[in-house]
Image 1 (tube, one colour):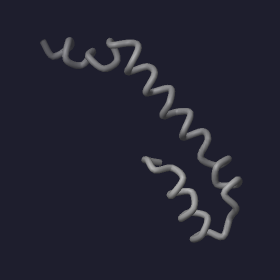
Image 2 (cartoon, rainbow, N blue to C red; image 1 turned 30 degrees about the horizontal axis):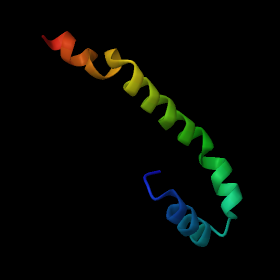
Image 3 (cartoon, one colour; image 1 turned 45 degrees about the vertical axis):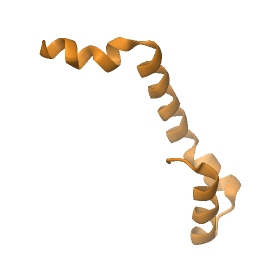
Image 4 (cartoon, helix red, strand yellow; image 1 turned 180 degrees about the vertical axis):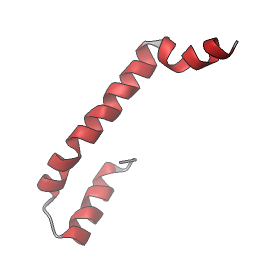
Length: 56
């Protein structure tokens, strides 16, 4: 799931014999979860700095 996504899709398709479209559909939930986490940590600093505030 780390960049480069395109190369990983081609390799997974070649190894498994599945089409790139099928593999892309299968990884969408994980991709959306990563985007949601990125947005939470970027726009709400309490999620990224909360542990530091608790330890002080």
